Structures are given as structure tokens and as C-alpha cells.
Length: 442
Image 1 (cartoon, rainbow, N blue to C red):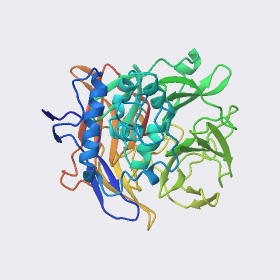
Image 2 (tube, rainbow, N blue to C red; image 1 turned 60 degrees about the horizontal axis):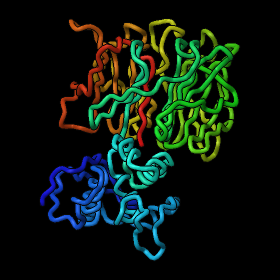
Image 3 (cartoon, one colour; image 1 turned 180 degrees about the vertical axis):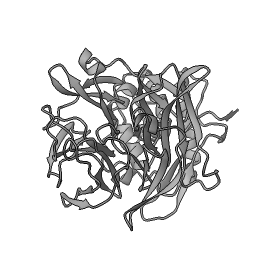
Image 4 (cartoon, one colour; image 1 turned 180 degrees about the horizontal axis):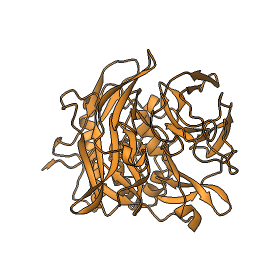
């Protein structure tokens, strides 16, 4: 019996600690002869699929790099579920997959596309508990398995998730917020396995959280000092928000760190200057804030760098030059993205993508944007990092009406025409204005 192309696994870069090289992993084209398990037994399709994956895992593990499945390092911070495994090393009938050790089943699930996880969760209570525990995402993180999904809300479309690998759009459940939050301006941030949406309800600022584990919305604990118009970014399971305006419109210099695993906010030292309408990003393990306004009329060209280890802020003069034209209060916050620790910006006035030189603190033009940003001062346009590519999402008006187009460009891909953007997807009946966008990598 021959099984071809049974599994769909994400292609990811995997590197060993202490090594400079990396290997591409993908088992889409494996050919499996004479599997050791009986696929004719009374198992569901996903359970059968797991057995096939187990065969690949046991017989082709050399394809994924030496030491990748070393149990001691992989599960150093992971305590398996009590699924009935016998402690003498034999798999019990109460295992996740009968006849297969739970450790192996978890490894296989970790390498599977996460778009399949809802199907696995429907198999039985054990699978459901495993998926909702978040353990698989911890294992994926240790293995270096990352899939980037795009979460998007447009003027005519509620929140949807887009999986670039499967080219599939998935509508999120309706957010149980009040009407004020629904129609007010919002800000969004993806951190860990959570999507945070910040806005204002009738009783004040609120934060709603969508969990990838439970596929549902719930209230996120509020910040110690609630705010809007802040700069923010995430790094793994943590996120930092800085600056912004409080409920009275006062511009803030305070900052907070959110831990998505603990669900807690921790107050950080204040920035050197207050600022609102700013942007934040992580680069080289440090958090930065650039742009924004220190008063209702004064713009900031300096940036600030926060060192997580020393808990100190460093001011960087002229990190983000002031635009020549346009009233500062009318422009969107700086459109910035970091790919492979390289900072890029989308200029709202010139429709150009620029690259930041860390050495001489300067910017240079690298290419044109695939959409116009100057017509709306940068509002309604998303500029994000999506894995190793830059992502630009904007509206187009054509013969068929308004559509949202997702464009990507890999700065490291020298084989492509540097002037060419790849059209990743087109979303119809969404309007031409991107209200919120976040990229979740896990």
C-alpha cells in the first residue's frame, strides 16, 4: 500500500542551538511503503492520518535535523497530560492515539498545520483538552515551527483570520462588546496565542481578547493606566504598550508590559518624553517607540529604545524625520515593520518603502508601495511583518467594486524583481478601508 501526499505540514526554518546553518523542513512529498500500523482498523480519518504521520516521524526523522526531537531538551518545560500512559514505557489504550505514545502524538501534532487543530479537537475530550491547554504551541515554539496568520477587520467586514498556507479565510465569532466599542476607533495587537483589541466602551476604555485556544472572545484584564493612541508591539508571549492618551486626553509617557501566559500587566519605567499617535516595534530584542506628538501641536522626530534587561530607556535623536507636508494631527502613526531585525517604514506622503540604517541612523528608499497611502494620510492601510516578508494591505476600487488586496514582498529574495509585489490574496465585499490588522505567529 502506498500513501502519497497524505500530510500537509508547514515549511519552516529549523536551526540547532549554536549552529549558523538551518534546514528547510517539509514532508509534503514523502512516500510511505507498508506502514507498520493497520489503517483498516476502525479509526476516524484524523486518527488514521496520525498513524501515517507517526510512521513518517519514526522513519524519516533524519530529515528534520540532528537533535530536533531530543526529549530532554524539548520537554524541559513541558509536563504531559495524564492520558493513561503506563510508566513502564508502553502506550495504553487510554492514550491520545491507541498504540502510539503520547509524546510521539504530541510531536506529530506540533508539526501539523494549526488550521487542522479544530478538527483534531473534535476527535475526543483528550484531544480537545490538549488543544485548549496551549501545550502544543509551547512545543511548536521549542521546535521552531511558526505559521503566520493575518487577522483583519475592514470597514465592511468583521474580524476574519487568513491562513496564507491554505489560502483560507475564517470568520471569528462576534465580539460581545457594546455598541460604543463596535463603532469607535480601535487598536489591535497579536501576542502569543491571543488577539487583543483596544477601544472605548460606554463606561471607559476596554480590551477584548480573542483566544486561539478556545476560539472565543473574553475581556482582557485592563491596563494599569488605560489609554488609546499608544505605540505597541509583541515579542513571543509578551507585549509592550507605551505612551498614548488617557481618558481625559492627556498625553502619557508611561509604559506597560503584558504577559499573555499570565494575563497580567506590569508597569514599566516612564519614557523620557510623553507621546501619542506613535508606533512601537521590537528589533534586536529591544522595544522601540518612534513618531508621534508630545503636545497637541508638536511632533517628535526622536525615538526611544527600551532595554528589557536593564529596564532603561535611551533617547535616539532624529530616528524618524518629520514629514514636510500635512498637519501632524491628521497623519496616521508611522507605518513600520521589522523583518529579520531590519526596520522598514511606509512613507505616507511619498508612497515609498524605506529601510532604516542602524549604523548611521538614516533612511533610504528601497521600493514603491503597491497602493497609495498619501490619499488618506496613511489611514486605512496596513503595513506589517509577516514572517520573512513585508505585508501591505490596502483597498482598491475597480470595475467589480471595492476590494482589499494583500501584497507581500520578501526583501531577502534576490530572485524577484525588486519592483514587484506578490498578490497574496484578494478579499471582496470588505470595503476599501483597513480598520485593524495584526499578524499572529505561532
